[in-house]
Length: 312
Image (cartoon, rainbow, N blue to C red; front, top):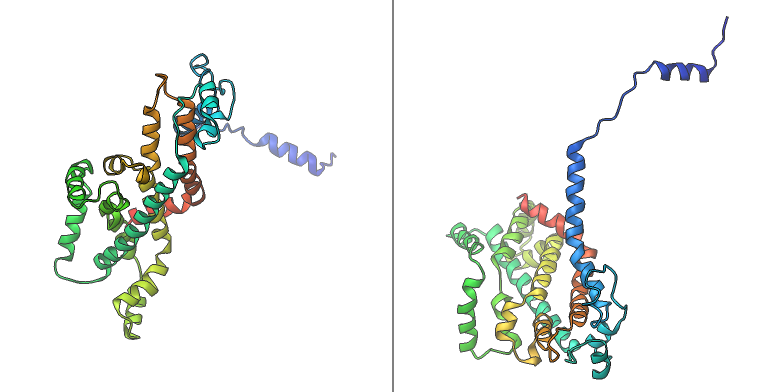
């Protein structure tokens, strides 16, 4: 009589089980392949911008096909930050043009901050009115706001420019921020969808305690809506920071020129006939860095809030 040990029983049991092959999910493979391709297509321009900014401008044409910096140098960043002399800039293939980077950076921060604070505050009040208050014609007025989402911004650029010109606000910060300071249809729609989901019982309890709409708005609605308001503030700040067309039209003076416009002017200053691509990419990288960091830190909150509002 043969006595089987525990190891022998386990071995026989495994031999008795049918061999199952894991099937390849080709749909999943295709999805991952498409995702990787999209990721590479999205990231590659940023890598190329970094590679060009770390290159010597004179060597770029000779090593145009290289994926590594051509004759590695930090000279482009030194030129942009005003740390290099004109002779040093010309020696590295720069145009010799100067960029008052810190002034333009200050202007961009002022414009983006004022637009963000004003737009979020006024849009929050408008969204509260559309979502929580009852007044005649509320839904029709909101429909008009929704239709404004379909109007391309280029159609309103010329009337806004004529208005700003007639008000004498060309080449001023007020002229740059006014068209988007009070509201945008998207911001009102975004916050309204979130306000609709707030509990009415809390609001009614506050009214019983004698709170008015203003007090409810500032003491209850704003604290309860900190997540979507933060998301809207981030999106508004990024949009205001990257805006180019409107500041180009009304902010030509150097004292109010923002960074995006300054980069375009810097590119056009080519006394030697060839743009300073390394300097231009270095300036673009520095200008985009605050937005990239902001989105990297708060990107998940932005995506979650957009998904929540879109599901309403």
